[in-house]
Amino acid sequence: METHESNEQPQGTARRALLGAAVLGAGGAVLGLPGAARAAEAGTARHGGGLKSLPKPTIIGHRGTSGYRPEHTFGSYNLALDLGADVVEAGDLVPTRDGHLVCRHEPEIGGTTDVASHPEFADRRTTKVLDGVPTTGWFTEDFTLAELKTLRAVERIPANRPHNTLYDGRWEIPTFEEVLRWQDEETRKRGKQVWIYPETKHPTYFRKLGLGLEERVAKLLHTYGKDRRNSPVILQSFEPTSIQRLNKLVDNPLVVLLSTASSRPWDFVETGDPRTVADLITPKGLREIAGYAQGIGPTLDLIIPKDAAGRLTTPTTLVPDAHKVGLVLHPYTMRNENPFLPAEFRKGTDADGYGDAFGAFRTYFATGIDGVFTDNADTGLLAREDFVNG
Image 1 (tube, rainbow, N blue to C red):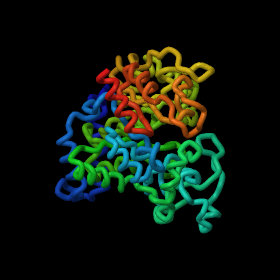
Image 2: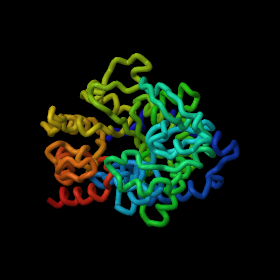
Image 3: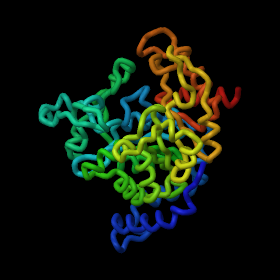
Image 4: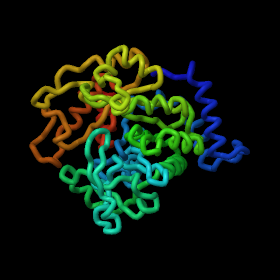
């Protein structure tokens, strides 16, 4: 994995100093940091080694362990740790109207909360154009944090996970600051450094609304002492310019997410950059990414494409090409249910039935990927054990 120490670090360090002054005040000093920051420092020192010290293949709990609990809740995050996930994706970051960062899969929350059952928010339902797509529902940027805290999380895909609906209404929406405190507390309780993997969601969309994500993320990471190269916080985004912006603000490991080959990152659409993901995964494109990031998070189809019947074909050269320029690969997303598996690993046709997830994990691990996002951390860990010992 490429590091960005050479040219960017002096500038990044200076900008972090300015952030520190803004967050801590002109008289801010190490002794003035919150206890959480000192705890994070100690945890990072204990862990050491940074991104490359994580187990391989790394098992990343996707939105916690969303195969078993409603996603982006502390119930989901805690269970991911209980099951042994190496890293927890906590969380997808979107802003509130009053500038707080909260953890939701998307800014539209009609499908992940009980907002529709709150008559006091009925008039907030609206249609917006989100990255070029008309989207109807309720949006975090139209709510204050206090208002969002009156809502409760629900299962996003009940047809595939009817058992998760048992937990509808149990947990509230977490803020990113709460996640950072939770990370420190769980690190202390478990005696093992907890890693998180937050994502900036739709950063161009929010910047145009005056709710820039990257500066807010950087300020919180600085406050909690988690903005360093070996800090246990990996940052990711589907927009390369968001990662480039973060590269100037923090020293954390950075990952560019990559959707389908024919798609264009939305920041490219907005700026008229004609390149697609297919251009970004060429050797030239990967070298460019390695200039400001340490990894990529491609969709699994970029690792092994599927044919028209949904069966796996021949692996691409993306894994060796990315490794050649020092990038790690954390593709997404492995799930146990039939509809999400390659056709040859499905068992029956039930939408909520499990297929041969172990066989699918084994096939993807064999390509040499460095880790994988999964909704089922326990399955991923058993599959890794099989693969490493097989």
